[in-house]
Image 1 (cartoon, rainbow, N blue to C red):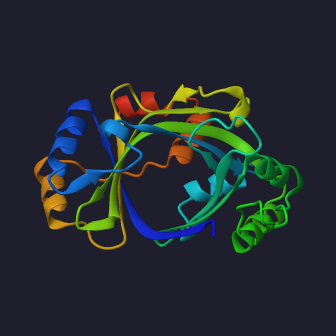
Image 2: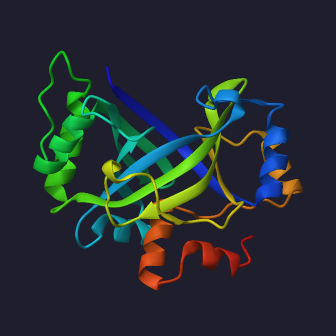
Length: 253
């Protein structure tokens, strides 16, 4: 079965290079690197975020309603053939709780879904889950003109707690975005969302933050911030000021 469901809280922090190095060194007492961090190195995530021509989903999201949702197509390397696996994800947030529905499919099937708004039929050679496919189809029906709107990619270091694999920390850097050539077929490039040397740290947890981490954050004056990658990209589009420039001019770093 190719469906994964996540339900958790996400807390975000912006770290400079010194804070990042210190934090990773500290948390290794309690956490291990994700299996994809081969040799404790980062790995890339490539995403296509979907929206309407009027930017309906991101406008609704930035208005901070109780409920919001996003649709994205994710890959861990640029697909080279239509048989390569990609991940369609519906990410929803209700009163601070994040749920994620994920279905794996072939790249060619994903392109067909984007073109038609209809998921390919389930067969023995496909990975797609019918329930998630129906939810994706419903989003295409509900949001007229839904299509890839922005490319967002980043390099990630991920860790999980030694005593609780559901508790994760991720550190994203080199967050790059573009609104031209919004496809995996045009290479991996874009405008930087954060200043050089900065990382977006996310605490992903289904329960309370462990005392050891809460104490560390307090002692090192690391404060939670609101930072949606797609939201910040859209904010820069509207204001004409890049998120990196705005961040450097603020008191947040």
